[in-house]
Length: 168
Length: 212
Image (cartoon, rainbow over all chains, first blue to last red; front, side, top):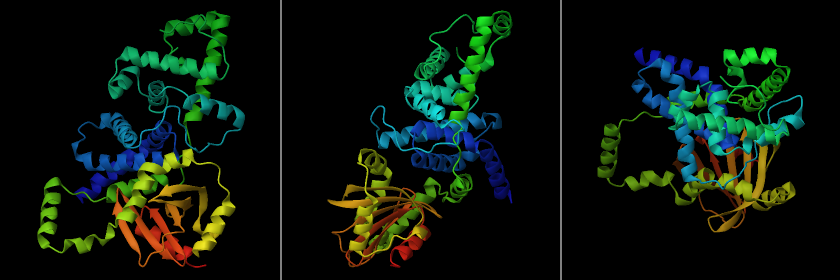
């Protein structure tokens, strides 16, 4: 009975974040099959380590950290050449050309910038939280995020440079 | 700009007063929405249920229990007979899928599906539509020869086939490792390596392949 309760709580917790965890893995791996493997192994690890999770409010960052580490483990087993891209799924978009350009732009981001952007957009983490997840300084994270958006904008041929508005 | 959705009060007030900045902000927010939309890749149908189920049902063995079990097996003697499951060639099939398949797909030139069909006829197996959706067809080096490499999306999940024209086998070989199962099935004029995430998937695929 106790075990069933813990399982139900685990399932409920994972179900809440599963979509974003998969997407995070997908954009790290840039390959659907590898992303599925990473997520599978990550959640198996999470289940095994579930009793050790002390703070429920840390759950989301805990799960994302496990996925990130599993991806790094997978990469260390099968190193990928720089700029390598796999055959990938395309989501539905009413403007396929624009979506493809944007996906190209995202795939072309340097890994550290892409990772910071994924954690912010998919995970909803703050710069401080991202810094903690990545083991980087908050300043470095801010730089990566700024560069990521600038790179995407450049790739899409949008406005050059920043004008006028100040970030608080 | 870090995130146009999280501007401070001062910046927002400025944007209300400054036409150029308001327009810039509008473009930035539009781009942000596009980025978010692009990143929100659809989750494959059924993946969540399968992954969560597999994660929970994977054996939980403490280190102490694993050590005790290992010692018991070693002490039993004759245990090598039990490890018929880990045939080296079948294990090589699993290793190929885990470590080399992605790169092999990247490196391969576009393949002609007709070549695969001819290879299947030559080996003596069927490739009917009920196998599932063919996601990739190519060739690759495997265990000292060239294999016809197929990646399938079946009703039971992803499966990899390696058709070996020059590897006749006397009996079926199996292996289990890294969360995957592999079987090498003898065919009339060669053999087929099947790697999937369950023995059930493999059995189903085998029965379809040999139905021709």
